[in-house]
Image 1 (spheres, rainbow, N blue to C red):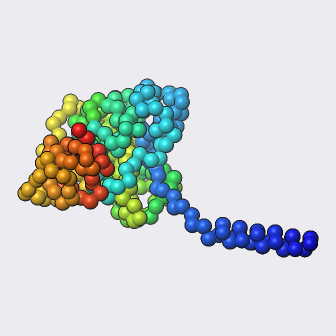
Image 2 (tube, one colour):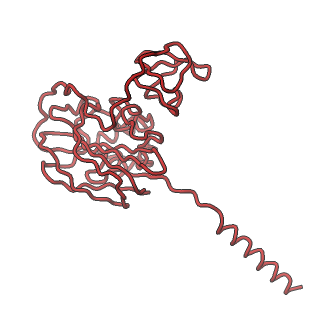
Image 3 (cartoon, rainbow, N blue to C red):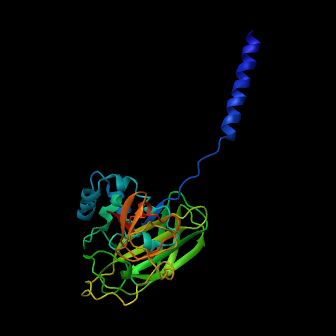
Amino acid sequence: MYLRTRVASAAAGLLIGSILVVLPSTPASAHGTMSNPPSRVYTCKNEGPENPQSAACKAAVAAGGTQAFYDWNEVSLLEVGGQHQAFVPNGKLCSAGRDKYRGLDLARSDWPATSFSAGPRTITYHATAPHSNSNFSFYITRNGWNPTMPLNWSDLVHIQTFNNFNPTTFTNWTINIPARTGRHILYSIWQRVVGSNEAFYTCSDVNFGGSNPPPTSPPPTTPTPTPPPPSPTPTQNPGGTWAAGVFYAVGAQVTYGGLRYQCLQQHTSLTGWEPPNVPALWRRL
């Protein structure tokens, strides 16, 4: 009887071990942010979400709560696929357009800033779940940018993009920083390429010394980190049912799922861009 019990226990153990071996593991999601110069979310995370030290981080926590800074490595959108301007509205670039991170969009001139200078500069990205074959793009705000105004896409000047890059936990790049005066934002986009359309966004405050020049008008053409939008289809059906492959102008109204929506940004619709899925493009009426 004792021998039978031992044999049965051993068999049960082998069966459990086999089950544990064959169970599929859940793939880790990519997550991360700039750590040098530190992004706003990284700075406030390091100050402590419950008791931030700087006035800007205190205001950010007051605006959006503490959870955003415990989740510091996921200022991201899942289904972007390079169409950043279609998903992230002007004025909400630091939060990726997500209400959870709205404190990062506060337009202030007292965000903790890293001393910066023109020329080659080594920067660091902290990825808690790095993924291969990713694109990393870096931008800096234009001459004449005013840190007390919302950050718009037209305020960004492209510096460099690293395509099909394989990041590690801490990845260093050396990029050539253009000359600036006063406070600016170093902006980054991490676009996953293989296995996901997820993209991550960061705002790092830097200070070149001196004062910011008086604000100037944005350049006539908007520097864009995404390919130009597709040519609009000449016909539009405002008031009809939403459909893919149709050009919608600002203000157009459609019906989807029995609800009414109004277009916020002109675009040509794609499958996956249904009104409930892209609040940057559609507002429910």
